[in-house]
Length: 209
Image (cartoon, rainbow, N blue to C red):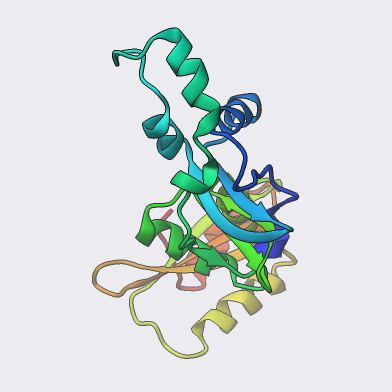
């Protein structure tokens, strides 16, 4: 799973010489909070809603309406944009994007390839990837098996046993608790959860959820 599989292509963008009024109108019309800044298709910066609002003339100032209408178009994106933009490659793993967004507290990452803007990836895109990994949008049953003694080959044995029951594994994910105990979260293509749990317990597996 790669960034290119979940990013939005052809994102709304602005140019360095656009005014902040134009940018604010784009944010409002498209319900977005960040705009890549491009010049001749090359990524040169990023401007956020916060940047634009800070630069906008405030109604609380002593400026007259005439002065506000005069100054508003004079402020250009190039004057307020962030030039050192954090980007990610479209070939990066989706989990790399998730880690970057969490560590930097970003809701959106700019996707850049060879200096060109190719897309944006957002928190919503990551949620879609999360749903795909766990198979939540596919019918089936969710079962969690604990492995307090995480030995090599145990996962393969579990998968083989599930297969012997004639059940397809939609997704299988391993998580660990604070004590490093492993938990196998499976989503299985079956509508008889109780029968599967019974088989697992009889085989000696500890079903915890």
